[in-house]
Image (cartoon, rainbow, N blue to C red; front, side, top):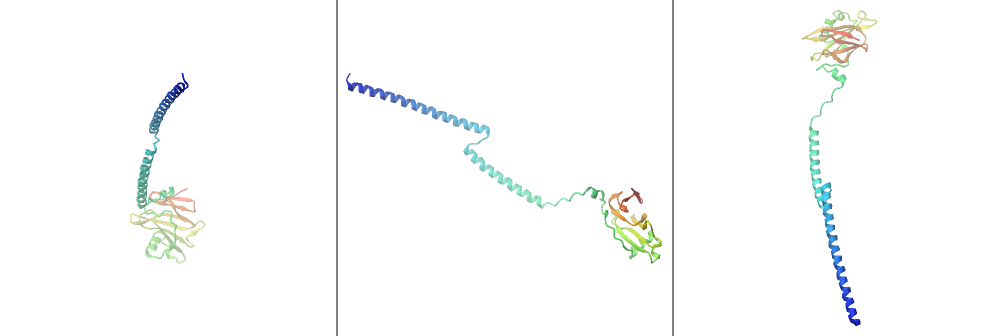
Length: 225
């Protein structure tokens, strides 16, 4: 065998090996592509199962979410505006206020005694203390307050004078309106009488000397310590 023949055979063998190597590389490349594609498909399936969207779907869902959020925000603003236009609910009364609730009654009102100068006032005083007005030395005053919520001011009459005062204080009489006329509800000698915030039987309670409570019994006031 000549040198030329040997060289030709060696070149042919090398070419055959090169072709075989290229075929192997191509096969490996195809397998890699298939594996990569399968892996990507598997990832998409896993994202779908776990709720993690792909990049495209995430963008779409984000836009939809933003639109939904904007719509909900607009509804919330509209609801707030409607709520602001509603009339305010009255503040619930406290426990003391509930106890004092008699429609129209002035429980807890501050008594303001004034000179009984009008004809109506003097008539009321005369019904309680007929002799009080005959002596010019007596100081006769009256405080008006609605004790039972009937819309008529009841009278609390105070008489100060030599024959009307003692160590416990001076004479006071409570005249309340009942069935269109005034009736005597309490006669007491004291220096301090106030209208309580509470009520009993539809009449405001009365407090004497800051601690003794008088309650309505249906006909008059009686002391309840």
